[in-house]
Image (cartoon, rainbow, N blue to C red):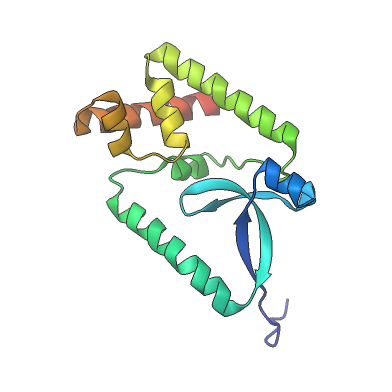
Length: 162
């Protein structure tokens, strides 16, 4: 294929939406997709914009992601999911959301059976909390929290690969 040199690049900004937003603004559910804004997975609608607007919007998010990456002592849950080649469907349908939530709850129940509290810690990791938040909530030492997070990730990876 030949490279087209004079093609203008299109810029789009992700606008986070909720079910209420979709209904109120009568958005087409097929236009809603999953993506990450910063380190948080969210449903979005892509809004066209200029190059200047795009960079103005995205630079603080990129900075936040880089800071989180620099302060993260171990691999993140998103990286683990990427390593397992797991990618949630981007169709945005309610059925997919329900199935995903059911599978998540099943995994949380499994982790709680292995050791009480593991399910809650996994939920916090899934929701984007950091290890320091988990330490505070469960009154754990830093080394204990990091060990439990590492163990939970291993158990989750085993469970997902079954």
